[in-house]
Length: 220
Length: 302
Image (cartoon, rainbow over all chains, first blue to last red; front, side, top):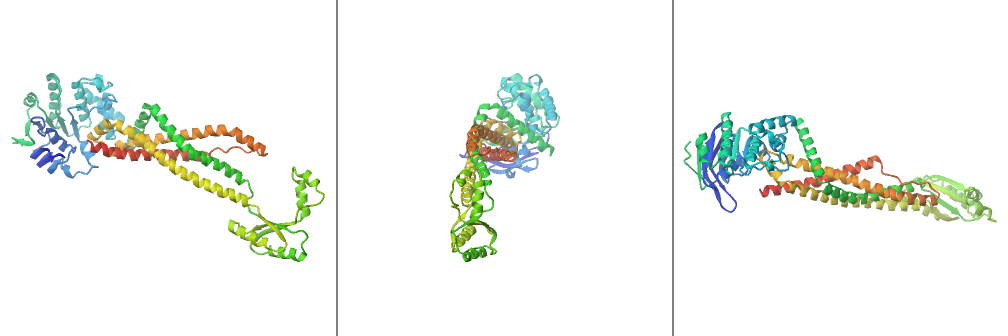
């Protein structure tokens, strides 16, 4: 589903965030990205979602070459990818349900259907009683769950999560990791960047370790 | 197709909500646009009213030939023969007695005519040439004026022509002014929308991350611009209606003094619709310029 071949990403200014990364991830796999801060985990996820383009090498997602993807095609690629951000990136000018329904609005799905689907996924992350609340009034863990609901509402085949439990205490973190395990079990491909060693051992799955932009122990 | 309609509806709702969320700035922007558009609009209406006055004037330009007193029959016949040539559409002779009778009959002049001891009026021809362009009229008048026995020629349509020429300048001025204020309107709309785009930076960034196309992001802003322009057009019509209300009484008093029952002519429904469509289109265009530029900036600073 995802393959990197000799991928290097150099940012303007010369910092090389990723150097010669080569690996592939199969459909339905659960992969953890580990490594110190600045090791290139976020860059790697951004390359998959076409938020960044590789400086050299080939990034391929669902058979599409990200480096050569036209600007117009990027939105359609992203609709098949659920993104979970460390800082949630929720919109505070609207309710929880309006945040979650946004990807379906963008895809042009009938409002009544999309509200139904949004409500179902909010229920799944356990926030149905807060659907009308403004996300600003929610705790960090709840906001992260709203973010996950938004990433999942369009039923993407691929879910990318950047430090999804980074700011949460252990209890919340375990909840969220359990949620990810459920999605993995229904066939979603997950790539999760995390420091959370306990989560990795609890969920199993493959680990890609990054060190200064290089992949170590990439044996799959 | 259905999803396209859904997107339009969604964008329109979003735009309406954004307008309602900032009533004061919406109102101020609409007023700025309204005042800008009311200037060429008012000039246009003023000219339409003047044209109305000018339109009551004789449509067929005529040349009057006034003859010398007691000219020989030979000259009379020469003039009559000249007026039978094919460049003259119509010519009729007005003897001086008939002219005096007509003068006596016309209202208000009876007393003057009765007070005359002898008829001061000359014999005259009223001539209508085929070619009524200004140059042709002048040429005919000039030629006829040189015939022996003709004392004077008079182009009846001259002052009407001058008025028409002045009105033509005025109309050109309206379009010039309309063009300038159209640019102003695009700028006002673009500026208002730019502020909106910057205020919604987060929403734009997040929407992009979850698969929004530029068109999806742009659409509510375009509706916003068009609606803002529409409100501006309505404000302009409001300004003109108030101005018309203020001017009506004095204009009618002046008309009464001239013995006329002239009324101000309000704009037609089609003209009002055209102004609204025009301002909405300009608002849309300003929004398009602004949001396209801003989207590139948002992308650059990602």
